[in-house]
Image (cartoon, rainbow, N blue to C red; front, side):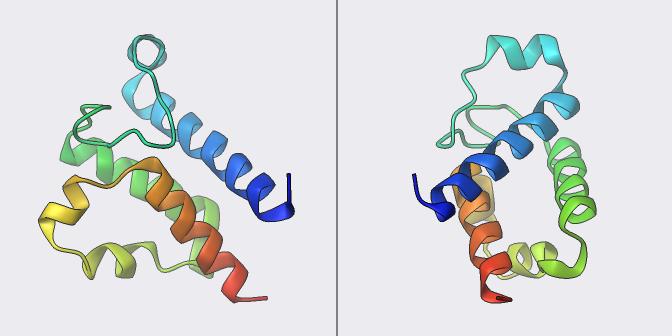
Length: 99
């Protein structure tokens, strides 16, 4: 596994942890949370939970990534269909572009 794949796996695990904290461990255990999971469809997260998730991402990565700016460039349809993998890829691209 190359370093980018390791980085993606580490970020995915962190994001999965954030999701579990937000929706609750009992609900998370019932769901099959994968990189392809879509927040609104597969994880059934509502807008308040998604905002909480975004805040956790922002707190973790700080000003190193412009998560809110990235989201603001999307239409509502795209935001609704975001998967965990989309966010992992964004974080990897944003953090690696600084190097």
